Structures are given as C-alpha cells and as structure tokens.
Length: 579
Image 1 (cartoon, rainbow, N blue to C red):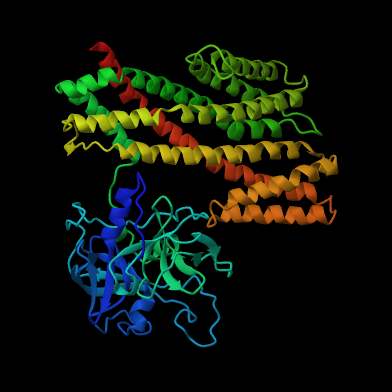
Image 2 (spheres, rainbow, N blue to C red):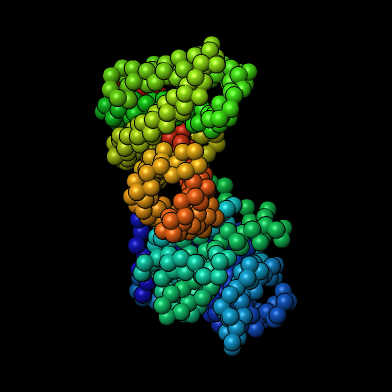
C-alpha cells in the first residue's frame, strides 16, 4: 500500500492532486490513470487507450465507451468507495508512444519528440466545481507555462495502481536522470508504479507537476516531461482551454492576511490585544524587511552597473589601443548621476557594522570619485580606473549577496507563524480584499520560508563557485594561462562543484551546455593543450555567469516580494504601538 505522507505547507497541493486524479475505465474495466487539466479535460497516456482498443492507429474516434472515475477511495472501514464516473465525449488530441513502449518486438528504445504518449480527453460534463471528500472545490491541475525544474529529488506519483484507490508513492531515490537518447523526452525515476498507473501525474518535492508517468519496469520507471506535452498542446491550439486556475501567490495571500488583521483589530478586542502583545515581533519583522529592501535596491544598482555600464566602459579602454574618450566621458557622467539614488538608500541603514550605512557609503563614494576622475581626466590612466570600478562591483556584489542572505535568515518566520496561528484561535477574521473573504492560513508562512531558504542556500552555493571562478579568471591574461599549476589546482574542485549545482535542474539546456563546456575544458587541460584553454574557459565562464544571473534574479525576486510585506507589517506595528 502506498503511503501518503503530508508535509507542512504542501497539504493543500496534495489534496488538490488527489482530487484531480481519476481512474480511466474502458468498457467498464480499469485500464489506467488520468488527471484533470481543465474543467472538463483529462490527460492520460495514448497507449492506455490504444492497447485497450479504444483508439486505433492515428484515429481520434473512440471505439469503446471510456469513462473517468473520480474519488475512488478506501473508506475507514476498509471498503472502497466507487467514486464518480464521468463519460468521455471525445479524444481531442493525442501523441503516440514509441514502438518499443507499445511492445513491438525488435523496436529500438528511442522515442522521438513526436512520440510523447499523451491523449487529451473531453468529458461529457465539467467536474471542476464538484465538492470533494476534502470539503473543497475539485479544481484541476494546471499545466505549467514552462517546464518546472527537474532536480535529483523525490518524485510523487499519484496513481490508481492496478485499478485500486488513488495512492501516492515516493519510494526510492526519486529522479535518476533522463533516457540516454539526448532528447530529454523521457524522465527516469524510482517510485514504484504498477500496471494501471499509466497516465499518472508526477510531482517534485515542492508538489509541482513535472511529468506524466508512462512506463514502469523492474528497476526504474519513466515519464514524459510535462513541459513537452504542454508545448505540443499549445501548438495544437489548446492553450486557452488549458489555462491554469487563477490562484494567489503565497506572498499575495500573506499580504492580504496582514492587511485584514489590521482592519479586524479596529473592532475585535481579541485581535487588538494580540497585536499589542506581538509588538516586539512586529517591530523586529519591520526592521528586517526594511533592511532587506535597502540591500535589494543596492544590489539591483550594482547589477545594472555590472550588466549595463561596465561592458561598454571596458570596450572604451582596450588593453592595446587608444581609449574612446567621448564615449568614456558620457558613460562616466551617466554613472555619476545613477549613484545618487543608492546613496539615499544607504543612508537609511544603521551606521555601524560591515553592512551598515558608513560601509555602503564608502564604496559608493569610491565609485563616484572614480567615475568623476574618468569624466574629468579621461586620458589619465582610463583603463586602470575602469578596472577599479569593476573591482568595486565585484567585491560589493559579493558583500551585498551576503547581506541579502543574512537578512533573509533573520526574518522571524516563527514569530510570524505564531502571530497568524494565534489570530486564527482569536476568532473569525472580518477583513475583505475586494469582495473576497480573507481566510487566515498560517501555513503560507511556512511555504514562503521554505521557498526562501531553498533559494538562499542555492544562491550561496552559486556565489561560492562564482568566487572561485573569479580567481581562475585572474589567471587568464593576454590569451594565456598564467601559473598553470595553480590553475589546475583550483580547476578540479570548481568543475566538481559546477556538476553538483547543475544536477539541481537536469532539464535546463543552459546547465547541460555548461557541464559540456566544463568537460571539454577539463579534457584540454588533461591533454596539456594550454593554447586552447583561454578560449574554452571563456566559453565556460560566460555560461556560468548566465546561470548565476538566473539564480541571482530568483533571489532578488523573492527579496522584492518579501520587502513588499513591509508596508502591512509597519501598519500593524503602528496600530499596536498607538493602542
């Protein structure tokens, strides 16, 4: 029997998955699993229908009665609820499985990109508004607009094994990789999936839909990445019908809850007293979110200098050649003007400390003086001044990354969770957002915390690799490797770290290319082809910088969302202090 193990913050996703999964019956016999992807649309495997002779060849016309049976569940007394059968009106679209997956003797196990093994079924009536055994609207599992990250983590297969009641299985190691045909169109994973499980949705450890199960063997199972299926259905014109359910983000839900708490406190003495007792927690949260906002603003300034200002500045001062003075002066003047806004932000920080106002203003003034010197005397060692600005950007970017991660670690999520939990116990919440009633949900805090912690950890690992690579970069000068022994000593652990980081998203083309360039450079070093090393390292470096940019952007997005919680938090604090 498959074990259902809920995790705090993901219970609602698990219930939604179980509610949307159905057993696919053909001519009254359980043949497979499917899941609701629209109000009246079900996705399953094509081979489920073909092998049961409900479809034939390239024809979409159904040859046997097909139904989707929802809510097949095992009752407390051990009996099985038959669930709700809903007739299938038509097969709207399909993509076949490979010949090998159909069991054709002698066929090669190399499915093409046109062999995605899916069938989109239209039900006779919509079922998304039905109330489920969990006491909530059934809804559906929206197909993601792009393929979610596929990492080496657990896989949850929600299935009807052998026609039995719906179960969740996450046994084994989880994601193992992709089928070795180079197309990444079959994901390999370990959880057991019995006959009857074909067409099951597969979720990652964050309960995001990543694949549809389509084959099970003795040692491993495999499924079709959901991004490929979504793209095929989008190209076939089914995009509007498969639009995901509108849902608030966790940050928006928390934002609304904090605002509703403030409104409710005006008329509810229990909530008012709770806020008064929580003033210290609210003050700490407000201060942390304010610092997080400032560091985010400073980081974005440096990021814009790094990507928008530095490349043309460096291009204006070639190592061998005359500087382009007019362009240089214009760029330096523009940088001088841009420094004013981050300077104002830095002044809001506490004065002391390595991350305080004085430390931030020091590097900003250093950059401002250097930009002014470039503008005033562009002919006086311009390359050295540009490289000085680059050093400031590099050093302070690392410092600000550490500051962002540090403030994220300081956010008192436990205090916020206790506040919302206590508010739930205090009684019903009277606030509204528009016409929508606000429901307190303390688990949303845990969801935000876990997501932020994951991104902070990921960012720290990429930052450490970035620091190592910048040291390697300093050994590459004038298209030659300086001190090869030192380069080799640092290169081996750097490549190993990159391989581990790239395992976090096996479906990413960029990360696959990155590992490929790293392996090519590694072979060049092993063969002693030092003349090729600067070029290969350049290829490798450009892709690592691009990959880190995405990681950096993700953390900044979360920091921005967190900092937006500062306004309702300050409103709660002001109310608590005024009473």
